[in-house]
Length: 204
Image (cartoon, rainbow, N blue to C red; front, top):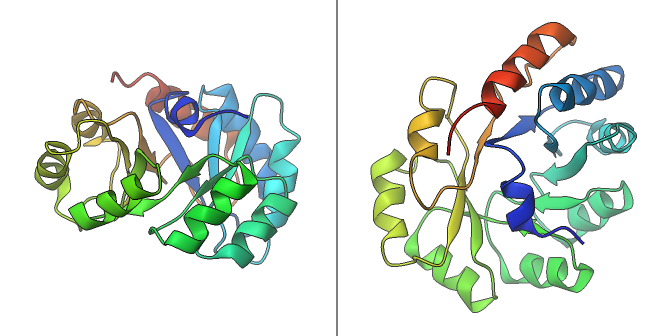
């Protein structure tokens, strides 16, 4: 099993992907991987999301996870579809324990010190800081990181190409989540590969 730490360190950006049409899934994954982004988060926000995970799993080099996993039911559905890691918008004890039982890499969302402390109680040290910009931005994550030096973060929510580098400069940040590298709609492979290559080249 690949650890969540290894997945977060695979590239500076984890694409946050919303697939509306199933035929977009495979070409999008191929273009992202070609650009150097191999860890792909498919959000469970559309009717075709689970089938999109199945399609993306067929792409060589892709490590495909499920995002917007909110309970044990959606966790089970994501795993049945072949998700290789799980991303949640928040942190609950039942979901964290279910992910641990399934031995699947798990990245829960946090926004407060209390969230992090609950995560530590569940033996978690890697978190998604979400919604990153709305939750206070870089100053907030700096403040949260100070008392939790053992923790590492993937800020997600409102981050784009103009400020990703600033987030990645934080010692506690291993990667950022971003949707700008995977625009919704028909896939322009050249454009997605270019965006992915630029994102993969960001320094941490």
